Length: 171
Image (cartoon, rainbow, N blue to C red; front, side, top):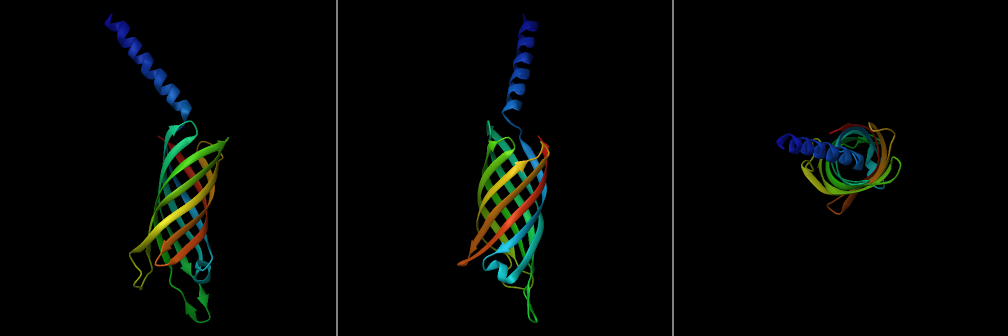
């Protein structure tokens, strides 16, 4: 009787694991990010380069809760003989990823971004962050996405278009 119960427990565990895998994959991804400043931010900064890591925890078919952390540095623009300093950002955002078709997803995000500017009194400040992201999973591992991201701080907005090429690891 104990052997039958043990076999049934193992079978139930395997069935549960197999059915969970069909719901979706929990992932950890790393990626290369490029940011193109827009609006007033475009007047002082050039293209930003950095990287992000994101964690996606599936909560149902086609839906995942996400957490994204990264670093993007925007180099300063030159106006005449004046050069604006670089703006370094460290965003921490939470979101919900909705798969709307095979590989295609939408992901609204909210969070906070720490901002530092070398040799300036703005170092260590930050602001509320929002982003609207759309992406495409080329495969289980490769991911392309684009987003509009805004950082609100001190009655100013730092807005940019972000592009990401990521690699995902299944957990």
